[in-house]
Amino acid sequence: MKQLHFDYYMQITYAGCVSECHYTLKCIPADNIRQRLLGFSMEILPKNKWMEGVDSFGNAMVYGSIEKEQRDFSFHIQGDVEIDIREYETVKDDGEIFVYQYPYGLSTPGEELERFYQSLLGELNAKPDDYEKGVFLMHILYGNFIYEKEVTDVNTTAEEAWKLGKGVCQDYAHILIALCRRAGIPARYVSGMLIGEGYSHAWVEIYCDNHWFALDPTNNLIVEDSHIKIGVGRDAFDCQINRGIVMGGGSQTQNIRVCVEEKTEEIKT
Image 1 (tube, rainbow, N blue to C red):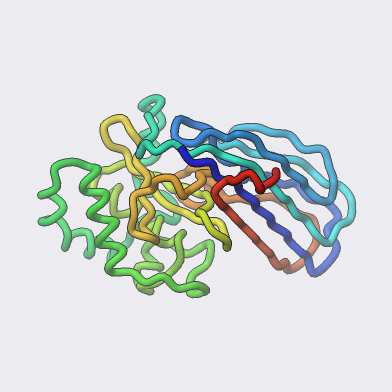
Image 2 (image 1 turned 45 degrees about the vertical axis):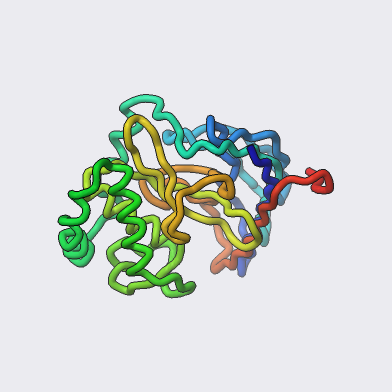
């Protein structure tokens, strides 16, 4: 077991005045057999009454409305989780698998990804099971794709990123999902945090023998105890950290700060 302390801060600054804001935040870490949420505290500014709920994918969410003028919106969540060393989560029911079997949204492949997939069939079919196939596809992707910031954005599809040959964790995840689903392996997008300082992270879970196994294609590794899972979905939009509707505001800038470190006596929540 490993205990991790997380600290996630996001601030949105608007160019003009916002008269009304309705928001949904998916920033609370998951609580399951691999990861136990020990507790958290959260502040949302401007101050308002907010509620907790669960979306259709089982992700915890916070939602509320701010009906007064504002130029900034921010949330700050921090807390602790305990990570189990097991490599999988048990699937709750068959309905959980169905939505992750087929192409969807940003994880839909196009002609170039299909051509690449076809070139792998010989080696892929030699693998003994879906788990080994998924790990093989992760290794192949890592060797054929370059990590580079600011060449893609939140709307970039798996096909578009693949054609560029470079991107960030969201792109790695979408491409691996596209390849796995093409191989008949249910796969889902995971949003979360990685030990260290920087930004949020994304990886993939694949289904095999009634279990979800987590793979991090950006770092070419099987997820163990250095990742904190927040949410899952068919693609990045399903587990977007912040979504909402604002009245006014114009253009906006976003500042994100994420820090995850192993829990010690000195860390205070």
